[in-house]
Structures are given as structure tokens and as C-alpha cells.
Amino acid sequence: MHIIVRNAKCQGHARCWSQAPDIFKLDEDGYILPGNINVAERDEFLALRGARSCPERALEIDRSSDHITNDGVS
Amino acid sequence: MVGDFSLFTSPGMQRIPNGDPHEAVARVHAGPPIFYSPDNTRDGRGTWLITRAKDQRQVLQDPETFSSNRSIFASALGDDWPLIPLELDPPAHGVFRSLLNPLFSPKRVIALEPSIRARAITQVEKISASSNSCEVMKDFAIPFTVGVFLHFLGLSDERLDMFVGWANRLLHGDKAQRSAAARAILEFIDELAALRRKEPADDFMTFIVEAEIDNRSLADKEVRGIGVLLFVAGLDTVAAALGFDLAHLARNPKDQELLRSEPERIVLATEELLRAYSTVQMIRVATKDVDFEGAPIRKGDYVSCATMIANRDPVEFENPNTIDLAREDNRHTAFACGPHRCLGSHLARREIIIALEEWLSRIPHFRIKEGTAPITYGGHVFGIENLVLDWS
Ligand code: SF4
Image (tube, rainbow over the protein chains, first blue to last red):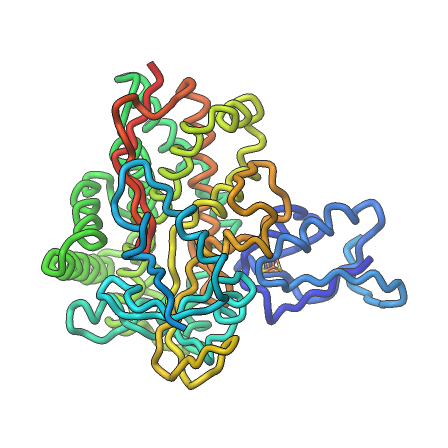
């Protein structure tokens, strides 16, 4: 599973980070770092919860396994 | 297109004993997604009123069409300067947000936590040592939140009463009291800025007078816009939320018991309380004519996005009028959304969590004191007064 991060939409609510600080990393201002997030299977529950907590809809859940990122945190 | 609902004049919005203004606003969801509310600001101006969470999100995420530039505070004084960053639009808004964000970041709030908690403990212990009952707003919620704010500004608690007096007159006074209070706040901020220019300290105002944007220091007007906003924003919103939360727990013994026996639930429960008892109405100004869901919004029209309405939207929240302290996936907008997401949101959240934790661990089972009735009201910032709790 991947989380597509739409940085332009992030307004620094930090809700994702508060659910899963190891998955959703913030910058010094509290806005999410750029780059889509590659989620390991064991982290999926928390990642989903974090993504669903974003009031801006800046985090999109992507289940197409062919999606490739190289900056995952898993 | 004209509706008969207003946050100021509708049933449940005036000061009434034992009211539930949040439930009263929820009735707009039976009506259209947008309508014109002829008397929906403090000075009786009309606004378009957006009821659905999804539409409010669209408005608040689109500052180009829906501007924040209103100079409300200054216009009450016959001046014209914006509260910063609240009344700025992009791109100027972003410049000031970048300057201020680090001061209010989640990390910064973690660093502030011990002193906030110590303050809460002192306050609650003073109450529990002296009585079996108290008026929560006056004895706890206001001194605690204003105290946190004064400390943040770098001021001592001695001024607390003076500040609370200004705040009360600014928010609830008549026109003359409001502008007198606004003047007093303004003079205070200007003087504090002048003092910190001469005698820097390790505090917020020193940071502001020494700050640079685009390789220049801030103009007096900008220092003032930031200082006054911080003052106004930090004053009553968190206290009001805390009042509604404690009133809820007093009236719902099961919820109170749940948080008492499992205090680790307080963090999640706070999100539900923020959702259910949101306190702020946001207003935007249309920068051009737009048709919104069939409504002819014209350039210059006011558009209201009331958080307490979005957060009771049944499309967004299952059973929105049921307060479920274990609710998950709670994407409420108590702190708004879009670029103007409340700068102080992380601090405010933490204050509420800490206050509930320390209150519940030090005050035994409490209820509304028999023979008393809390008074609630609607308006720009919803509030509660005369909240007498009793644990005898
Ligand atoms: S919850 Fe959304 S807005 Fe908030 S930090 Fe995460 S991505 Fe950004």
C-alpha cells in the first residue's frame, strides 16, 4: 500500500503524525514532508487511520501495487 | 435563497439557561446546502451560510475566490490594518505563516507541555483544596487558558484580571465598550512592542520585533497585527471549548466515568469534544461573482463557514448529534481548514487534553450544581457561562 502525499493541500494539522508518527514525518513547521509513503503490510492499519484523519484530504490511499516510490519509510 | 437561520438571532443562539446551541445549529442540515442569512454577524450584516462540510472545505481551501481580508478589529476603531496572519490572503499570508509556524508547531508544544501541566495542576489543586464546587469558567477555564497565553507572550500572571476584563468587553460588550477595549489592547500591544525593542527578553514579542521577512524587519502595523491577533485568538476560544467539555461530562456521568477509569482515552475523546462543541464561525469575502451550488454569490458578499455546522454534517459524520467519545476517523474542522488552519491548534488541543486530565484526576465525580443553570449562547464564538460544578 502507498500513501500519495499532496503537499500543496497539507496545512499542518498534524493529525496523520499524531496517529502514526513513525509513518507520517513532519517538517519543523509541522507540515508533512514531501514524497509518497510506502507502507509495509504490518503498518497498514495505522497508516490508514492516519491518512483518514487528514481534514484537508491531503493523503490519498493507493492500493495499486505497481505504484513505485523510492522514498518509503517501511 | 433566504433562510430564516442566523447564528446570532435564531432560537437557541441567544443567552439561555441550559441551552444546547450546537444541537440548535444542527437543524440547518435539514435545509439547503447554502442559503442567505440576513442577520449573521455582530453588526447585523447578512452572509451566505454554507452548511455542508464538503462545501465549507471548498470555500476555505480557495482563498483566491474567498478572501479573509476584512480588518474586523481595526474597522471597529475606524482604522484599516489586518490581523496577521488571519486577515491576510496568499501570498503575504504564507510569508507570515512561515515566520510564526515554528513557534506553534507540534514540537514546540511538546516543549511547552510541562509548564502548561504545572499550571493546570496548581489551578485545580487550589480549587479542590478550597471547596466542593466552583464556577468553572471564572475559577478554572479562563484563568488557565489566559495564563498559558500570558506566559507565551512573556507576561506575568498579575495582569490576568485586566486582560480578562478587556476580553469580556471586547467580545461581549456594547459598541462603546468594544471599541474602548480594542483601544486598550492596541495600546498595550504597541507599548509592549516598544519595550521589547529597548529591552529584549526571551519571549514572543521580542521574537516579533526582531523578526525579518524579505530581508526587512516588520513594520509597526505588522507587529501590531500579529500581537493583537494573538491576544484576541488566545482569549476565549479554548476556555469556551473547555467549558462545553466539562458541562458535557457533568451531564453525562457515563462519559465522565469512562475518561476517569481510562484516562488514556482523553486524547481521542478530545477530538470528539472539539467536533461536537466547536466554537468558531469563519467568514470570507467573495472576490468575484460565483455561482455556488446554485446560489448567486456576488463580489463583496460575506460567506460564512461555521465550524459547528460543518462538524454536525450527517454526510461527514455518522450520527453527528450523538457524542461518541470513542469516535475514530474524526476529520472535524474545529480549527478550520485551508491555509488559515488555526495557527494555535496544536497548543489549544494540548491545553484541553491537559486540563481534562488534571481536572479528572483531582476532582471527584462532578455534576451541575443543583439549582443552577449554565447559560449558553451562539454568535461568532459560542460560549457558556455560569457553569457551576459540584462534587460534594
Ligand atoms: S493530516 Fe493532512 S494536513 Fe495534516 S499534517 Fe498530515 S497531511 Fe498535512
